[in-house]
Amino acid sequence: MTRDAVLLMAYGGPGSLDEVEAYYTDIRRGVAPPPELLDELLDRYRAIGGASPLSGIVERQRAALEAALAGRGRAIPVYAGMRHIAPRIATVVEAMARDGIERFVAIALAPQRSSNGAGYRRAVVTGLAAAGAGGETTPTPIFVESWHDEPRFIEALARTTREALDRFATPAAVHLLFTAHSLPARVVAEGDVYPDEIAATARLVAGRLGVADYEQCFQSAGRTGEPWLGPDLRDELRRLASEGVREIVVAPVGFVAEHLEVLYDIDIEAQAVAREVGIRLERAPSMNDDPTFISALADVATRALDTAPAATEFAAIPAGGVAR
Image 1 (cartoon, rainbow, N blue to C red):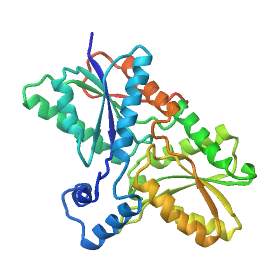
Image 2 (tube, one colour; image 1 turned 135 degrees about the horizontal axis):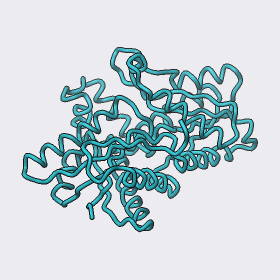
Image 3 (cartoon, rainbow, N blue to C red; image 1 turned 45 degrees about the vertical axis):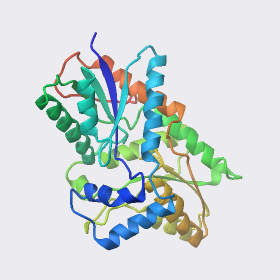
């Protein structure tokens, strides 16, 4: 039988303040950040405890997915790699080759497809090339391009959003705001489907909740000197406050784990804006290793393995059970 595996891929985050500069430099493609930007980022990490919890959360996701697949009779290893910090995706792929893996599903822990996702594919290809150069037999990757509408993912998002809504005395009167990481606005002109897939995820979650009145915005835009996708979360809070809105739930449907963009950009920065303008803001819990979310990942991985040929070169399997 073909020896299968799953590879979870995440952006990564520094495990200590000492790692922040190297991490930031890696994101900037080897260009060291200006001192003022580095100091600002260090302050943000200090505000959330001095490190990103992302690596630990991804490890819990990895272990939970491996257990979920074994529970379905598919006892295969699940690996995890990061783009900008150890364990690097390419290094993990090399290890998979040494372990004798013949075929693996590569799932980026970013549900909506974007041009940014090409970095994950490049990292996998780099690892395969290194494994081949080292004399290892290289496994065949099965890339999952998108799973923004995966039914159990939508179910998990709807449940956690409902949990946040229920913290209010009158949940039906609370304004619902979906958010995701911004990208440079030029991606739309270049044909990127990311904004459409974010909108689709939000629409499906709202539909499951029976909510017709909601809005979508973006957050965490980079400082590159070019326009980024908007509206920005902080600007939306100010606008909604000016229209008399006083209760808001933010559901970060573009993120599946707690990290800086959630713990600082929402829980600290956006909360500060909300208090300033007289809004009570509650955030929907992150997916992390939520059992329903892990079941969604298991559905994605199982379907990819079951529908891919036994041996293909860089297969791409669409995910998601909701008709597009």
